[in-house]
Image (cartoon, rainbow, N blue to C red):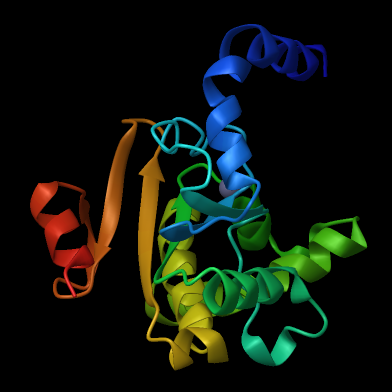
Length: 208
Ligand SMILES: [Zn+2]
């Protein structure tokens, strides 16, 4: 907590003046180019988005980078509400689901949700159940990192079925962050696998 509060002081000391004009402009509205749905894991993402300026990226984070399927959106409406707001009101055209290796949520899912004491976590992780089922149907032994990648694909499917995403033709992408190597992979639909993100992938995935 001290670190968090100190960073607020640091911002005031070093950056507030630089950003004041920008924030004054942003106070009138935002038009981020993309939405990022990422795992809440502390090891993930913050450095990936470090290059973004305020107002450029709409971010939702939760345990396991899960997006409940639209039919369940009334029970777990947080992500659906963010998608609706981001797409309908902010004009977001791309949504990126970002998962990672060594994910605690994926490990918990793999160990069995029934083992969890906390009722909210036990219930929340059900949105990843289908990824585990698919892998168990295809493979004898499932590793947590394989599940993390399958889960990204499942959540992309869930998001693509949300009405605002369909209505506005929003493009949904998948990123996988491998902690051991600090390498970032992107899902390549043509190759049906995750590949190292490079310039050509960026070009391919963002061209209209
Ligand atoms: Zn995680």
